Image 1 (tube, rainbow, N blue to C red):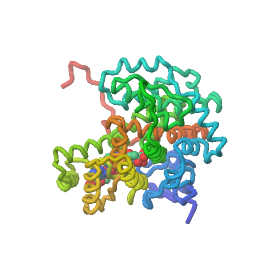
Image 2: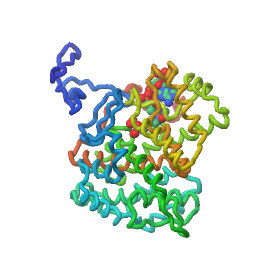
Image 3: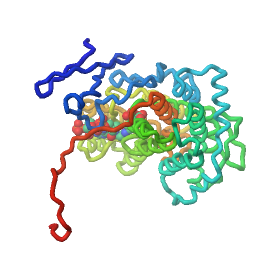
Image 4: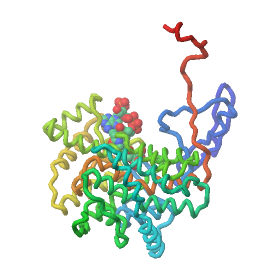
Length: 428
Ligand code: SDX
């Protein structure tokens, strides 16, 4: 295979280098195309555009492979904790026992948030969406840490900002759920690990001791690991592009939260559960009708389809299995799980879904587990963000360390040509 690609444009030949990744993916480096030929490439939705060379996450959508730093997602979900995976994503290697202890000790030193940040809740109307709150609170951290505003200061400063954000995220997510219920906040306790602390702050109460069920801790670790990174998805690409302007980490991640919120991305996990409830109550469990309406484009089947996975989403396979386990261990019998399985079966045997390669994605079964664990539906996308945080930060850190150029796509303009200005009295 040639390491050059030749384009013929307006009768002239141009040669561009071919870049090959470690797993043999190939790309044509067209960065000089416009300067040399006057052409830009056109690719709405960046379906076919590589925007970086990254060594964090490998994904093969045809084969259903997902790896963080070379480790298979199946192994990580089964054998690692979320903090181990966070370390792996951030620093490139699995930590030794000492490195993990130091990392976790460091995180526990930064779990509290400034008391004034909590006052922000007072201005939110009751019932405001948790993702809107999360976005505001994360971006708001930049006001409390002015030393983080310049991401070029020093690697030590950047690392402190990273640790602060990772450490405070569970506290902020738990605060959002507590405030939503009108309950007093439960503060972090340094003797607990990351996930236990999060569950304590979320489900514990100031009036009682609370120890989360090991089944719940295990399920939470798994879910967070499965969400931890997914190369250049919409929110991660957003974090990178915002960070490429040298915006600080809190601002960049706040933008990532905004992108994740959309129902075509992370917001789909909330939509899936609401859709299943709708099928149960309004559609009276008639999944065939629902699938027929999806084929007629009258409704979207949330939790189905993926830009990159065209065979199966390996995360969905793991989540489906653990969904059965968790519900059985917790003694929960949720009829929504039966509806979800029926829907999957009907959809996967239908030519419309087969031809378009539409399979359940990561969001399809996760909501059923979150519900069984006791999370309110509007919190589901916040949980996605909690899991995705180390991935967003790692991608931001990689981009900054390589000092990547500012992200600035081109466009093809097709509006009006130059027109003479018309005074207001002459306009029709
Ligand atoms: C995530 O990118 C990532 O990595 C994201 C993510 C991550 O970890 O970061 O994996 C997390 O965002 C998962 C996806 C969650 N979203 C949903 O579950 C919402 C439902 N899915 C769709 O909106 C859609 O499948 C997308 C947005 C996920 C992917 O969109 P694409 O690649 O642009 O595909 P498309 O919309 O162009 O669809 C192709 C065809 C169309 O039909 P035709 O025009 O060819 O007739 O498939 C149809 C679509 O109408 N289609 C669906 C469908 N999804 C696509 N039809 C019914 N139900 C669906 N869910």
